[in-house]
Image (cartoon, rainbow, N blue to C red; front, side, top):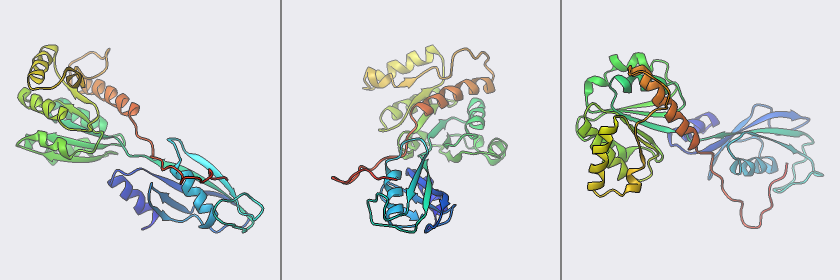
Length: 281
């Protein structure tokens, strides 16, 4: 598999990784500038030259944090090495770029506000799930103008019965927004969300009176006060006035993207083997 296909696979499987690029070469080196490889926690694709150079790249990649990094390796028998001598005589600078798992967001209810929210969120690098129990809200005619230039990878879930079952299919860490047309459906989704392990934030649209009823119901159904407090309502940021769908959606999107930023997942690290010294370069 080439590096580009590897990047696509990591995105599809929501697996973190690092893209390693030969950024510059001085003198002789096994690969020219522009050569690339992809590194995950337990696999690699492509090559930047093999030998000590590549092993240093892999170790640095697996220790990489959230920020890109430049690594320079001298290919000389007089230079420090960890994984065998490479005496090509040149010097290689590598650019390491994290391929983080993109955030996942699920919007339940693609009515007036949900549609405007989808319009905003689709312009961000997300896995975006749009869920509704009403097929007429998810038609191509309705969604196509909103998603025509989407950056997000969008999945549409048309679930006329028990939309809360979608919760069990979402990736770990998915941020959930509940804003359906039916308060009974909202209540079922809140109950199911609290019973679904590993979700991210849970937001509910509605008034204080609505939440008072929901809170009592959730407590009566056996959820602890701590669990119930995981639900944020009202959603959105303070200071944005207006009840038009587009106005509400702006506030909700701003609050959600702030939460997404706070919980962003960096590329995971794999610890060096016991007794192995840190890579040099």
